[in-house]
Image (cartoon, rainbow, N blue to C red):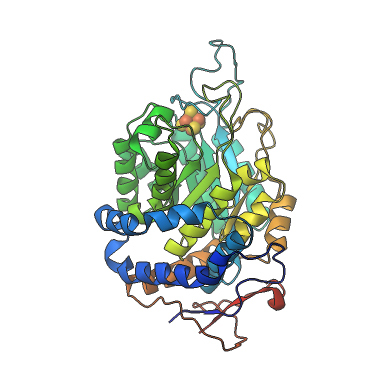
Length: 440
Ligand code: SF4
């Protein structure tokens, strides 16, 4: 049984004065979380049941997403404590190889869309595609740095032979070194047969992002069937992948009334539990040049951070990344994402083509190994292997599915700090600054 003890939620590192809401916020969060954990065994991955629960709490979640100051601090502390219950500070660090910027899609927020480059349009992109050897060489550098997740991402292209060859070679290299590796792919929305080939080659996890839980908004941004992409997430889960999805906070919407936007963000926060994924992300929108959305306003870092906190409360077992867009929009943004409940960071291993992979245009934030590990340590986290993190994930997921995950208010000052799977928590922040503690 997991227990979170709520001692004194407004920590002494909180500078702003608590509002009246603060006095009730912890108990409100506890009631919300406990009600959800009671539903979890029947609701996780079941859209209809999640829909009913979301309807019941939509005005609360909408308010949570707007919190600032000390109330926001409480929300983040609450979520961070749940992250600690599950992971004890254990953090997965992914090394990303951006294998190609070729793409057959036309996402309105992305400079690598097919309309740019190849001499057409005003925004030529210097296109590249790594060979299987280049991918495998970059993967070796990732393994040499002691990371256990090789994350291969790129535009959506149908010809994936080089990718399959590289994945097989990385798995062989992992065996030669006796160093386990997880291979994660984020390569658009391929058909089921191609995901099966990648899986057979040795990929173990896959990300298929949806931009927004609202079909109209997602289709307006991508010109691609939303239902087909949701179906592909289900297919990929069936193929045995660990699956991630994610949304873009503040992506331009067709119907942009404030109430509609707020409800849309609430729906986004529930997307991971609705689809039953293992990983869920949120990125604040960053307008990129040479795209139809080039002049749209950026997303809101605070709303996106609050969304991480809500997603952490909804799924204590989820892998949630502190994405680079947080750092791009606000210095220190990735550290704040960890404090809101994130437990994963990606560092970049694309030195040869980094300037050509235009995820947010040429002014993107490329996260170096030094930056990624420094942010992780500043947030009081420690680098753990993918297998350890997944073991902790599975343990928490099993507790959630068997109604054995509880939050109990308690004033006892216990000092045990072990995760439910027994992994020691190292590198944690000063306990005097940790109002929420875990005991078992
Ligand atoms: S977001 Fe991905 S799928 Fe869409 S255009 Fe860019 S690279 Fe292609």
